[in-house]
Image 1 (tube, rainbow, N blue to C red):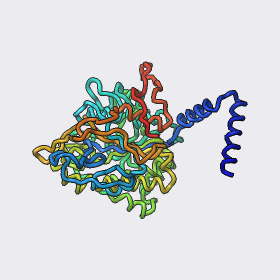
Image 2 (cartoon, one colour):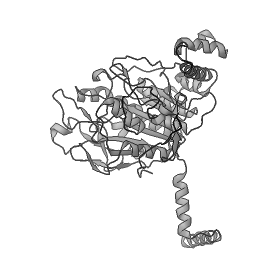
Image 3 (cartoon, rainbow, N blue to C red):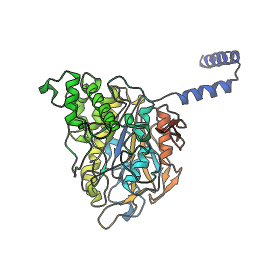
Image 4 (spheres, one colour):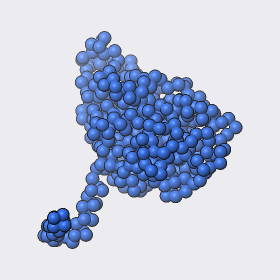
Length: 453
């Protein structure tokens, strides 16, 4: 009976395809192309570990390396046979079937500013990097937002809870670049959670959608615009500067006056059990807010999973030149493990994971050699990144590092290739050209997608 049905279905296909003037192989080739070209994700959440997350103590442990390379931690099995994670990612190890780990990404930039720039834009830095310079390449978050629609009063892109700084200097790479200020992701403050430990030296002001509205009873849009002046700054400088500021004031006003984003921002409306699952930490609450924002219609959200200012690696960031192992064990990995595992669980339980692409990014990896201060230094020679959801096939590893974790061992890829993969998952042609503010055509990506689908 089964064979009869199979023959009947095959005969039907042959006759239908023949009527269309196609051979059966041509039909299946066309069908496969149509499927691969179809958008797979409607929204994107970018998780950034500022400072350079060690690949050894996360997604690429080296148990067979000498002790002065492999470090103090042990590997553990994951839900996927043959894939091991660091022992301090036990919750995330249970989600390996959702993750595509790329262990062979590399670039040549050993400074935080340059490493972050190429990781977030997919392009090598050129010349002096000034944070909001319009000649810069747009961030991944800004570029994705350029191709996505959003409803009135809902920003195309949001980032939280801080801008990235290094010893008080604001970093380039998080903004709209040559796309223009309209594509600068809105910086939003996470309204709850234990703060990151570390020095804070911020000049960028995060948008707080609460603004004591219940006390002030602000309902008039013009009155609200005036109130926002004190939060976002006063009119100053050129008309262009004011026009940009006015754009953000009006967007903020739209969000505050009835936008779904305002409701999403109120974490008190979330199920207490779900809030507890993420953890009472600004990382966990930022990832919860990320889920709520994409659910409310924001196309792309970037969450910084570390303190905003590296400040010599003294705070809760991944720049672990000193005391690497205690810092990873006691603070960084447990928070990351719990928060990210909660996000993946939450997205899956809500039926959102297939249409939400989760992107893991960092500046670079850490050195094979442990230094005299018990730390690992900057290492762009090879490191690990990952994807989940959005049509990505989980339970796989692409590429490898060599036995020392020093350089790619197989299937080396670039940040541009990783960006091309993200664009494909979002239904964006990685070969597309856009025009900068001077009308020059620029191809958005120089890489090619990885076979992760």
